[in-house]
Length: 89
Image (cartoon, rainbow, N blue to C red; front, side, top):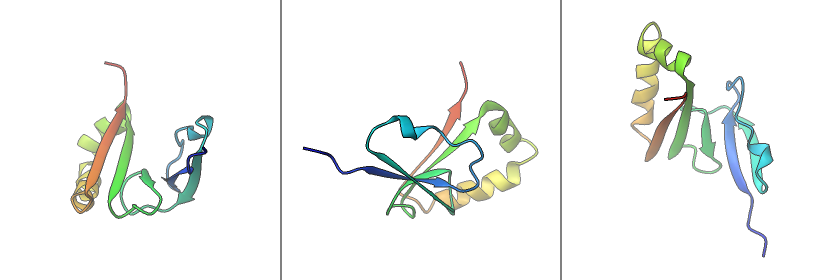
């Protein structure tokens, strides 16, 4: 029995998208997302993930804080939202 593919939407502004291609059954759709960098196809208005490097997060909490706060305001309308920070402890 083959499972239906998992369709992930990757925002077109994501400069170095995560390499989901290595996972079988994952379909990547490049499209503009109003909030976040990643979502599930058909659920873009309900769920999103914002991916940050540590340097990007520091920038979002300092000089880019206003823009990041606007993103978080948009995220409040979603049922599920997460910020994933890629960094070592």
